[in-house]
Amino acid sequence: MKPNYQLDVADDCSRAVKRACHTNPSVSCGDCRLGELCLPIALDAQEISHLDEIVKRGRNLKKGDYLYREGDEFNSIYAIRAGSFKTFKSSWDGVEQVTGLYLPGEILGMDGISNNRHGGSAVALETGSFCEIPFHQLEELSARIPSLQGRFFRLMGQEIVKDQQMLTLLSSNAAEERVAALLLSISSRNHRRKLSPFNFRLPMTRAEIGSYLGITLETVSRVFSRLSKQNIVAVDNKEIQLLDISALKAVAKVKMGCS
Amino acid sequence: MKPNYQLDVADDCSRAVKRACHTNPSVSCGDCRLGELCLPIALDAQEISHLDEIVKRGRNLKKGDYLYREGDEFNSIYAIRAGSFKTFKSSWDGVEQVTGLYLPGEILGMDGISNNRHGGSAVALETGSFCEIPFHQLEELSARIPSLQGRFFRLMGQEIVKDQQMLTLLSSNAAEERVAALLLSISSRNHRRKLSPFNFRLPMTRAEIGSYLGITLETVSRVFSRLSKQNIVAVDNKEIQLLDISALKAVAKVKMGCS
DNA sequence: AAAATCTGTTGACTTAAATCATGGAACAAC
DNA sequence: GTTGTTCCATGATTTAAGTCAACAGATTTT
Picture 1 (cartoon, protein in one colour):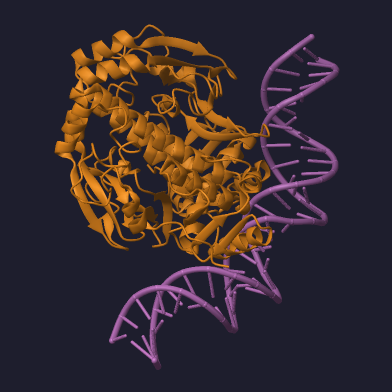
Picture 2 (cartoon, chains in turn cyan, green, orange, purple):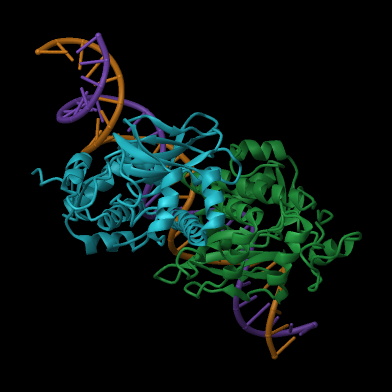
């Protein structure tokens, strides 16, 4: 019953032949194979080299390590190179509320820009690495490189759009829709990263998924079971296989980014 | 049973003695009494005058008029001077999903930045007026005025934080919490605007509130009834009076911006 | 490798909110 | 002012998801 699983971080990396491996800590932005997803989009070679000067590359983290904590002073934003991260807030009673899932090439930490404090925490869901971009240096550079300013405006705009999509997903309540939309979202983001949109590892536990989607872990589990029974997906623990994308889209009523 | 209601737009305006009235269409950013809430924060007089040159002031709208529609080309962001607006998306089946409520001094339309298309629509909930700020001119100006760039980064960051707060509100499901949090949010935003945090008009219908909060209009109505019965609020149709803020905070478990 | 802990599935039962339905109040149009 | 809509409140009933509980697989720890 075990399908041929998606390549994990290490395999994924070893495939990268022509371009430098994005888990190699010393590779510059210009050579990073995530460049086309990350901050550098829309910059020319010279601009990228300026960016390179302020980026602190190749930090590594293992599962459970914090990128930053709720309330920490905001200094930097972070670009994910490998692995996956969740962001969350702890409410007054200590219950943690997942607010985001971030994959390689995506940018983390923009929640700190408005107050100079991070509004939530970010932790690694598995072994991973990232680049740190000191924000005030990025601001200075943006003032000198209009295309970088533009890029960053757009990046923040994307975060806004993404949050609002999530917001509409959470108001229109069916549990199955939410789970289906999450799967489709990961699928399409994998597609962008040139990974299989059909087989992937969902790096969160059922409890984390539930928290993110506003449902209980039992409901998540039951939805997976139901979708399996209908042969729409195959679920083996965290390994997910999408068997019938269009059926899944029908369940999701096509929200969130779709491939 | 009718309390002394909050001042409406016109009254509010007529009170403004020393500073120019913000509903007067010709007043510049430097003289607008919303300046301290709006884009100009953190700018000096000269910088504001540059901003003033690109701002198209004093557009008026009546209830139901669109500021922009979902899918429209994105050209400008909008600063609200008076009145209130909702943003929403229509899902495939035509059901409209409210995504935001915007009050004077707040900025609207940032959902279009990433794609050059608006991701949702914005309509006036009552008679109102706004300033239009052409985005590409704002970008150019930002590249020349670092403090404006910084201000706009922060503004977008605020939108992200706001959306994420809303997101956590919608995942932790109790209907009463959601309604209470909305009331407290409006209360504190009114407070910032130097209006009564205790009496205000909630410009949305029950259906719109429900759509925004991810519950049905009947549930909204019932929650209002329950909160009234407990003497936490007094509700007369759209006029709301907060009688016991701390009880209301307890119901909300203090989420969203609180005063 | 055994023990302990975490994680996932499934069942039985409960509950909060959705849905359906009605009548009345507010508001807009004529 | 009268008529027609839209909007709101409330009751009765249904339902999807939450809660509680037991157990089986995984994963870590020692």
